Image (cartoon, rainbow, N blue to C red):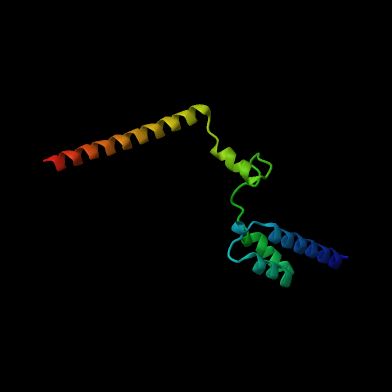
Length: 117
C-alpha cells in the first residue's frame, strides 16, 4: 500500500513538473533551457522534478497581483498614473523640451556672433 502511494505521488509530481516546464515562459527558466529541464524531469523523475520546482524557475514576482494572471494587465497596473500625476509628467516633459530648444537657440546665436566677429 505504501509503495503504491509513493509510486502514484511520484508519478503525479513528474506529470506536474513536466507540464510546468512545458508551459513556462522561456524567460522564467533558470540555468538551462526548456528541453534540458524536460529531459532531466523525465530521466530523473523524483530528483528532476524536485530540482525543477526548487531551482529551475523564477518565482520572484507574484503571479496574480489582482490582474487574473494576464501579464499585460499587470504591466498596465504598474504603469497607471492618476490624471494629476500624468498631467505633471506632461508638464515636466514640455518644460524639458522648451529648455532644450532655448539652449539650441542660444548656441546658434552665439555661433552666429562668433562667425560675425
